[in-house]
Length: 413
Image 1: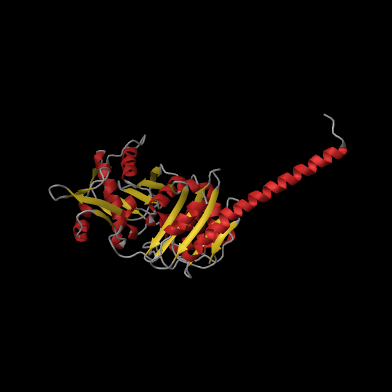
Image 2: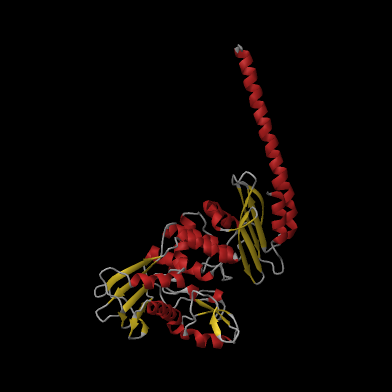
């Protein structure tokens, strides 16, 4: 069919007007759905609370007190995860090194592996006894080198308790610096984990706890946390028929005199570690990562101060956040401060890794809870698979983010 130039112009103009009308209608619908309905949130946000909600294009559709500096609790772990990805890389794997000296001493140097667990020690023991060309059937002393981190490291907000969330960090720790135990039917203490024996080294600690079951943590005093890693490793070495004739003690590797015989690389990449960190909200893992980042950025030994400095530099120079205040990486300290705006900037960068978060329905999220503090941040996936970002920081005692999340879920699905 032939169309004149005038007809073509008419159809072009009509098509353009139609498309503009569709866009306006869609925009109006989005405004009604995502902005007007969200005004129901206002009564739930007090003077010490904040909220920010953004659509997949990054437009802020609702906010209140978004610049207020508040306690983030464990939602801070999202930021710590990003810091680790920046300094270490997603494929990073922690290592643990094993040396022999001329006196048949085995020396173990840790580098802060947060997932050095019983299963890993069992594999290490097998690998050590299978090294080609090295006869490894006797140890004099087992020497533990935790010098990659400065010791001890005091984490603000951590108390001297038996609670696992108060476990101290270190360069050479196993099983999150804790032991899980229970009583059997005869009333005798046994391990609550089949892969981990209950060693004599921990019996006194368990009895002192006055608990019938649970998980206790090791103190950094008298190097208790580091020494436990040696006792557990020796257990697995003996299972591989290695003879032991000396003692377990702390010390340092002498690179010029000691021979590196084995370097264990964790089977867990940083991506896997972050998924565990966010799933279980493990404070120990968070600060292990933060201090490791400090050592990576400024050199060993790793310190909390250097970890905080590395994180702050990343926030300012890469994320364009200069008003975040952190004193540690887990969120356990009430001295940490962040605004909803800053946490939203973090969420924007973390979006490609949102699948590492806990998921409930269409929501990927991280919670944060301290006494009187409730926080939640993450993403809601819509029917097209696109992500809305949300930050809810409740610093008013007695209030909960649940009614806020209920409103969001009704309007952002």
